[in-house]
Image 1 (cartoon, protein in one colour):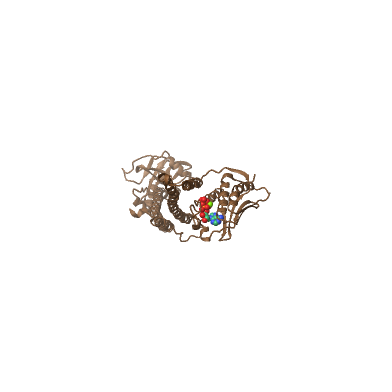
Image 2 (cartoon, protein in one colour):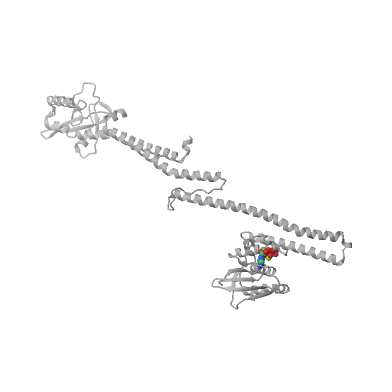
Length: 491
Ligand SMILES: Nc1ncnc2c1ncn2[C@@H]1O[C@H](COP(=O)(O)OP(=O)(O)OP(=O)(O)O)[C@@H](O)[C@H]1O
Ligand SMILES: [Mg+2]
């Protein structure tokens, strides 16, 4: 049973069944119709037999049977073909003379309608008429009308052969054509079967190969992709296309699995980072509050104020961390809602810079804005874009030492308005540059500064949501440039 599980064996069995059915119906039809054909042949060959005899001999004279002439006809035909039977009938179909022994003839009258049809000649052959010796079966015959001095005397009625095929074997034995025909059907059946077998093997081999590839893919734990089909030339048939699709699908699955694994790892890392980052300020906060509570009366006013300040700073940091984490997770949701509107980027940049001006001054920095008077409208979520600007400008101020410069400018091109934030700070080394947009990533030397490492992650996510990006160029001890392109507002 196992061998019938394969596609090729199922196809071959189906083909065999179909061919067998077809051959059986052909042979059945041939067996059914061949006797008719043989009868037709027999009748056509003997079309003129009765006529020739009637022309040659005067079988009836003045309604009387010419027994002498009849006798010679009986004898003559008996010698030539013993299976044919000769009858002389009158104009009503009544038998007048025949050559059979008494008792063999079972009817004395024959139906003349088929005889008339036969004499008409333009009939479909075979025409079957009564056989006086057989009440059940009609047979082919040859007949001719007998005239004496222009008056119809009766008919010479010759039942031809009279052979009925009682079995198929008998029929086959008697028909050479039928045997040849059946032989041809059987040989074609075998040839078609062999050709079908080879063709199916050829076609199903590739399907089999595909199935094997899939199985291997499954067994490799979805790790090794399915190979391309052997003969794939890029313009193959459906099976080749299926192979290509499977190949691409497997690569996609491998990619997705890797992505899921990476996501999982980064989620774990994030949870670890978050708990660490939350725990540190929380522990300090708790420590200072505890000291304040237990040793309140031993502390000087100044110490007490310092402790409260530090506790407050830690609680602020905690709050910032929690707020930013929540913000990032909301933004990371695929369908984070954006409130698009058209607004002037130059105004927004001015506003944000204004907010940071005092902080920059306090740090001994110059904060420039180089904004042209050209209108610079973009269509975006103003609240979120403000957040991006704040995060990037805040970094520029934070990571630029005293005496440095931070300049913010707008570059207006045909399609985009790019906000560029340039600082003359410490710069970011190449090995860090690729990581600064990751959550919680902070360059080591900056870890003592305030910050959570979420600012750029949030900024980048916001730009992604606007189908844009953040470009960064940096040189250590020279400075860093952040570019934030946004498309022009069309309205
Ligand atoms: N302009 C800059 N110059 C030098 N280093 C920078 C600059 N901007 C960012 N960085 C580096 O990239 C890191 C990530 O920046 P990000 O803004 O994400 O975090 P953060 O500033 O440390 O914390 P916060 O979440 O408070 O912004 C920073 O820690 C810093 O090391
Ligand atoms: Mg920052």
